[in-house]
Amino acid sequence: MRIGTNWFKSLALVVGVGVLLAGCGSGGQQTSGNGGASGGSGDKVYVVGTDAAYPPFQMLEADKISGHDIDVMNAIAEAGGFKIEWKNTGWDPLFDGLDKGTVDIGISSITITEKRKEKYDFSDSYFEANQLILVAEDSPVTKLADLKGKKIGVQAATTGEEVVKKAFGDTYEGLKGYDDMPSSVDDFFNGRVEAVVGDNGVLSYYVNKVKDKKFKLIKDDSFEKEFYGIIVKKGNTDAMNKINDGLKKIKENGKLQEIYTQYFGNK
Image (cartoon, rainbow, N blue to C red):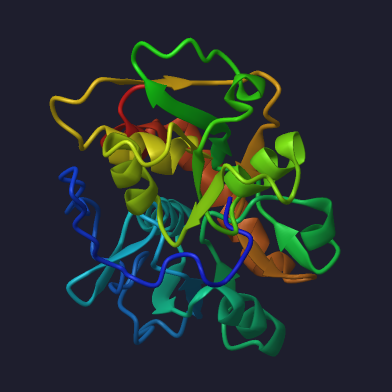
């Protein structure tokens, strides 16, 4: 889960461990659904905002938005029979755009929370997230508590940082925050930190790019599950009904699982 603004300024990092942004997914700037962006039939074209800086969920490749969430939203629009066009807004401007009406729909690995539900309406969940711990293959670590006293890398302003601070304190000296996940993974494999804590989707994506390195990923059952949803301005029932209809269809026909497998492998 992303909770801040300054956590991924570089959109195309190549790090020492050979982590690359993968060229997968459909071009996100194309309109999806029936017909073209001009809405030749007169149907409304919904503007979908995202922050294309969180691979593999949202990313920029050349000048196109792509990634897991982009493919999911395109599939929802196609199944739901409505048109969309993409706008790379950034994180805070995404919510501001919804407030001002310049953006109709938001999808950007947004965790469903009670606080956010006070201001926005969420779709049904399309992705279940949880934290994972990256350690050496021969490490005796089996849970978060075992990391006490060790140097831990996290992506700043994410849930990974929050859970480490909750466990060991806000001033824990062993905590090292990074602007992005590739840098924390790079430092782990170069021995600068002894573990990395991060979202399952993002962390798995990057470590699986690493070849000939020994490591293991640990799931601590004490970590709370998070669920990503698609948001609209509170009261926009027309858009939300269409989103949930399309989401229901791609869950039932297997398309959602197909997209998941493309990015993360089989569950």
